[in-house]
Image 1 (spheres, rainbow, N blue to C red):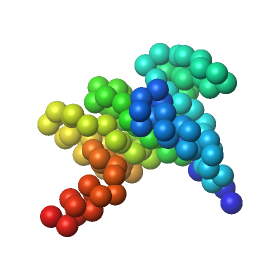
Image 2 (cartoon, one colour):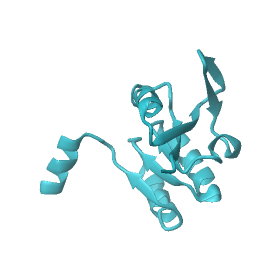
Image 3 (tube, rainbow, N blue to C red):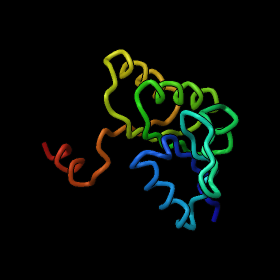
Length: 125
């Protein structure tokens, strides 16, 4: 079975660091890059800057950063035709509209809260 190649943006944040740990343990997923605002090496993991080169080899980009950074990542994702999962919150109306435009070009899953309970409650209401 082919492994899903994942890039995680915001790898030093709370959610990003949890995802990095989880993906490393998962047999069906391969972590191809972890990105941050600047290049950092921690242990045996190198956190790259968000760029075409750092995100090129992924099938899916998972983003838990800040709105400004997410918008930069989306531009790259559209150029590379990559799927993206966005867990970032706090977008302006203009940024939300831009995300909708990008969603016509690439697959985007955007949720401000990734917990099952919150999403179930939103669905039910």
